Length: 265
Image 1: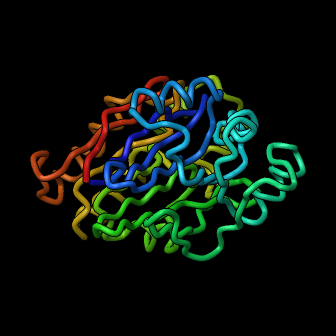
Image 2 (image 1 turned 135 degrees about the vertical axis):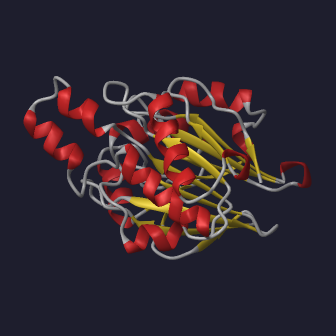
């Protein structure tokens, strides 16, 4: 059995968990460590996963809301870390990981504890931002694409055909436009290397639904420029345009400060 659970999601910190048949001695993967070590441990405890059961930590990119707790967690547990070569260099330069730490550059698909992890590029203003496709031995697949300004062919190829997709739904365009954010920040968020809005996310989920994806998680919602109800309604409305009823898929918006409900594949 494969279980996906967002532990925390938003500009204040991001961390998600994939477990694959732990009762049969499978593995677990953490995606990002953007909250404190204490919060990570609390999230794992609620998910009934011990730190020693983690086979690896996948890092999407080096922004603080994705690596905030990594230094302390890595020092305590030495869980292997996987990221792009550029992000690994950053983590070592900034002393998030010591030189002798088990850290691995992820440029090609790699098998990690019975799961095939395939990285794909995401357009974001970082040293190198990745999304991940995780395929299990049971034939289930999870696609993760957070922090992306637009949906590129690389992103779409990584997500297409997944059983479950977690995609950024960062902001509502009208709320951002009316917000107190300075112009330069609004421009950065709206840019092709910024963040994806509700409508852009909904458009992509509609395409994924056509290829069989039936579980969706909206992630990285802005606290100032979005509302979970608004993001969810945008997706429901867009899928309804294609004749896809709410009973045909499962949808949730990941919670900001506590673990979200588990999604079983």
